[in-house]
Length: 423
Image (cartoon, rainbow, N blue to C red; front, top):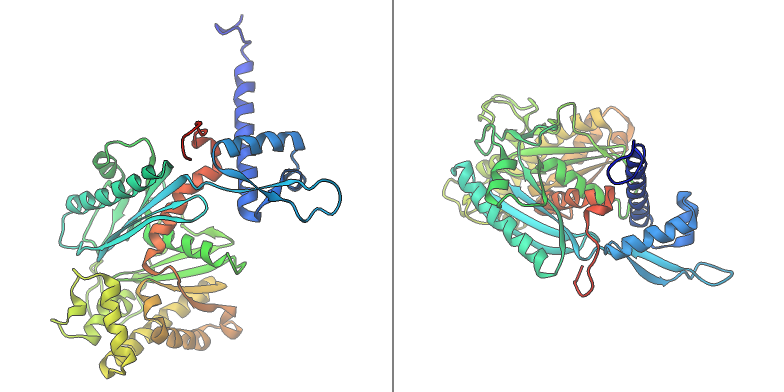
């Protein structure tokens, strides 16, 4: 018996296997060029074990999809005719990351090569707002980013939303965001509805996890570290951990809530409703309570967070005693909790992100001292403390990267370029 299209029953499976194999090989070649830089077709074949004819066909398709492009001749070849290098393109393929935080909403669009298409952050006092109003405003920012991608004739790989709370690993749904005052919110579906049920993928992840991925990618440009801990601070404090080159999410996706480690004495109530949480002594709110009066402009949540921190920086640089005392106190507590994490995880690098990065010149020294004094391994277990170069942009950059990652897993999600259409 034959099928209606004339093929024998087993042939559908063979065809499907062939499609799957080619998709996998496209991914192998694209990731190889991304990770190792421009390569000739012959070099790609030698490195990957694929035959030269297959590599030539795969490269041609990736070029047609706008993911690779022809580069200069291979100057490293000593004998024979130099091969043509191929290099990562993707200038017309973009991912979008968007973030909800206590003090702001933000968005970024990056292309496949990591270049910024759009980046924007707006100050918003989110906590007093209901979730629907906040998501309305975030949807406006996402639409602005998508429009920027469309304006350059690009294809959108997807959108990833960063939230400061517990995100369920299997579903990507928000379970709790204490500093926002949110309980369970189906952020994915709420945003899909606001964006008109878009065709592109839309996902939700924890903001510290996304920031850690972005920081890891940034550091790996110049340092081949494998293990990293990011401490990102705003009103809340989050942690993202990369171990062996992979993000540590935990059994259900809830890892990284380091701000709720019970290390502080009972005192101010945390956003989670408990006392003694680490973020009650190292979060931005804790610093502002120590360093400023109630009516001080740097407490105004309607101002951009970096503008507010600039005010703190100016006072510290001017030697203001109250500011310096507050920074020393926060830095000491930052070191106590940081040393616990270094003892447990032994990272190569501990990155100070968020507001910790901005005020790093005053916070880094007590943190490093605590690591030397409190980490049992010699020389603090070899952990280095560095300040983030990405700062408050890390989570949206990480979200955009996650959106783009699916292109490297399956390059066929990006359509073939049409003649005369920019890609």
